[in-house]
Image (cartoon, rainbow, N blue to C red; front, top):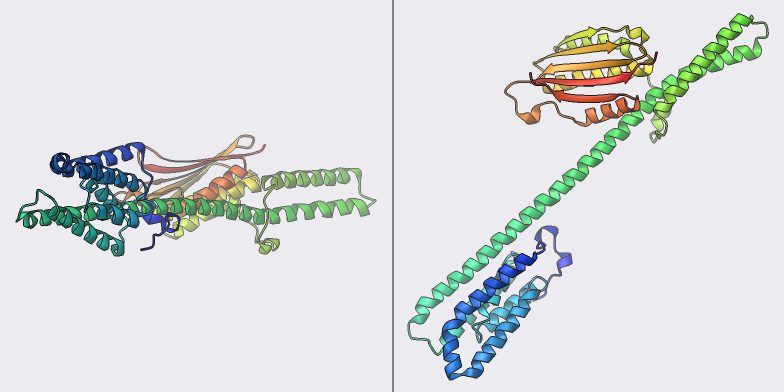
Length: 394
């Protein structure tokens, strides 16, 4: 019967490595089983057939060495060791270990013939024993069959458990790799969306700079005050364009659709409309906008808008029937603080509560690119708080 190399087995059927302590207790049990089966006949061999005593011992040592390779050639080792139990009582322990190891592979085509060989060899050893008495076969044979059956059943259970653990481990590793891939994909997608938004902003500012620079080049009759005013406007727009370009420096555009400008993106002034839209959709949300949104720079305002949008989306998904609030605080020269707060729903399983999904991962990436920071926490009074601090230039 051909052996299957270990490298070609499915991952679930590969036996795990055995520690040093594992080898020690296995071989100790093997020696104990061999001693228990040989003790009674050993005295008769020593007194009446000493050559058989040494032969039995030599065969037992040979089978003990053979079981070292039971994992590499499980079928062959199990057949040979169990066959040798017909002439050697000391081979009983190694034969049991080899049959157990074969059973962990859970292949009936190999297990059934090996079990039959073990039973036949055991019966032959019993009948050929000088201590055999008529009637012993009716008592010992059922016990022998029961022991072999228990050994096979135990081995199959162990093999099944090993395959289950290996499958669970493989699934966990696959899930972890897939989650890492989803996180990376979410980050790349968020960077691409930011790049598309910046396309419109830069196109607007560069076109303004080009228009006023062209006026300075072709109009020779402009007053000095108007020239200085136009130059200051060009300087301000060019500086702001560089600031916003630095936010996405290094991002690559792999999608050819990025070349087509999207509609103008909402900023801080649109947050009030976003709150009203959420109310119209059925959410109980209140707004406390304590800043002059017209003073918030467009790049900061767009990020703040996305924070509120993602926060209300999470409320709609995970806590629809709870109250939520949106707060904007801050002043130029310091920070713009955006806070979205909602009550945790009662009587819901923990897995349904707001969690850091791919939306929050992308949002954190956006906030960090804007030079800000994001936190999320559950307070002692069971409020889920999403807070973002964004730099607000003077």
